[in-house]
Image (cartoon, rainbow, N blue to C red; front, top):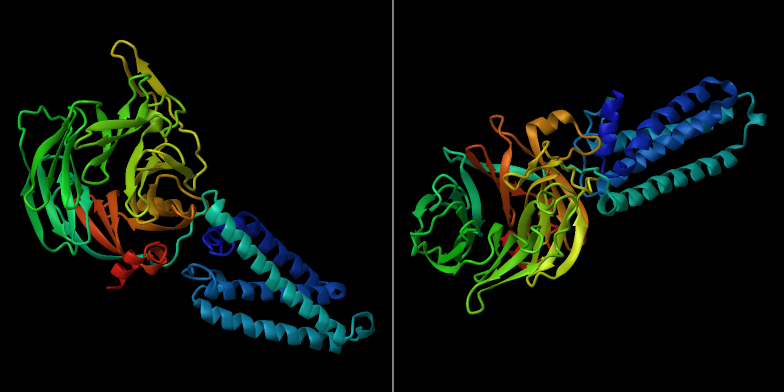
Length: 482
């Protein structure tokens, strides 16, 4: 096995990933030292005991992987990579026993027995080495678990088969976006036909084309988007600005809000609230707001949620999501490793971080004074491309490769990292592979289903229990059991 591959496999180990950099060097070094000791007759017994201790540690490593880690890697690597983990465990146990027996026989048979040690003393030493080896590996496991889940520095965990592709559907065009979904349907808006809605059943078998009928057709729309929060849907255009609302049973909508702040991002919270990103009239910075429709028909702004780093506009770009389980709005920054949770009154709950270490947006902004415009002077460094929230889990399509990851995989797949918003911890990561050279554009999660828009296709994946077991909701668990 070459060194780079060895380091990658250690980095993706569920037990030693946090220490992969050290162990990639330490293990071969220790093995080389042991080989040297075995060659020198005077130190051979020390070399044998050291080799025995190393084999005990490898065996403890496999035992913990099989019984206590959150996932089992695909193979154990090395010369025995064709063995599964249980076979490797049996192999190691046999050689641990043979090693123990061989050391005792070597100590008894050598003519220098007087200068070595009695078998009873040797048994005590070997027992101590056994207990110490198991203890060291167990301690490393506990430390690694804590580091990976709560103090991670971009070391991802890729368990075996956390998602399984179940079906795909060719949409014949790539201008669709996910407007919303529920347990029975997926609703796709279309940038090319702004008031058209494609309704799919959850199995991607039945499709229906719906045309939305609005009661005001004199509006000069420039950026229409459909938001579906069953049984309601909204037609929004932040450049006008205006909001229409209707129900999905007839797809007829009437205007319920016009005027006020212009807005960019928009996210339906319930039948009467929409979270938006808008521009502050005081300084031109982007701020988060909440449009409340109905009797009050007002907009609440909280300038403290988004934190300015460079210009207050580009550096605060991001995506809105909502957890109905937690009753929290989530704002994920595009150019830095941060997200913020706020309640439906825009009171900050807490600020969290994604795996990568890019805490400040790496942007170069140019100003066109004649046109009073700002633009990028150089391509920005993307950190988080897109996201989705279901229950207490945040799913993030990351743009930053992690340690010990193969660059070739990044070219052929998109990576989604999962975070537990209640435990404030990282859970795991998985790949969504390209189709016909096209990468994932957007995605959404509903119960144990992942829906991905990729090129002209919408694809459904089944989420394994490695993911769904992290949901914190008895209602969700009941749905998954059906």
